[in-house]
Image (tube, rainbow, N blue to C red):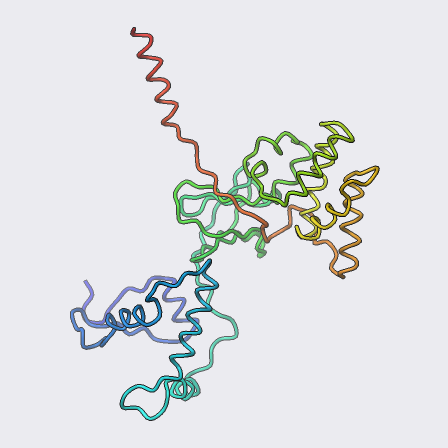
Length: 306
């Protein structure tokens, strides 16, 4: 049993204290005078900065809004003081120890195993990993807003963090390499079938199938999609739009157009699809509800009884 200010530090909090070289100091239980205005300050900030509630599309925009609020607050002078908050902060900062050269890596990092479906489990969900790392042990770094998968010291996959249960957060790019062997996955695998690409890609597939037949046209379409492993979607989209309607249209012609655009921009392709880290899109695919099968079985039993 701990007494007074004694605590057992969580290992990550101890790492935080070590990184920034500070000694934790905890308040005594039931001693509100040791943390004056701690609770009321939250209400003050909510009233000043979040009333009405800001309407923002994402976390980055919210952070921009809060930073602007902080800068306005820095110009405010507290009653009883002779200089604004910002000037006092600059003076206090000059007296403080310098920050480390890199920020603290605020995450947890369990070790996990990638399965045969190129997914790894983290926090009751599964995230996709490039095909080259299937069946391998990896480190999963869980941040508040994202999940990174690390193998051999390199980040090989990055996803937005899901706080749901039994969800699959899948990136289509790592699955492109398997399309050459399993072209039917383009129609049946949800991560590829529901991929939200610009309409020009669907128009290109229709054009290729009309020219070369359904099977050959599908394979040409797959080779065009695999270009997204080497080039950004905007570049491939521009190449597709430039090739639509041309005589002798093939995937190789689209590839040549994408490479010309890359050369003109001075940014060549990035390599194979399996090595891409930054995803274009992510999909959360719910797990199948096995309870429905039980309902079908129970209905069959009732019909047998009748």
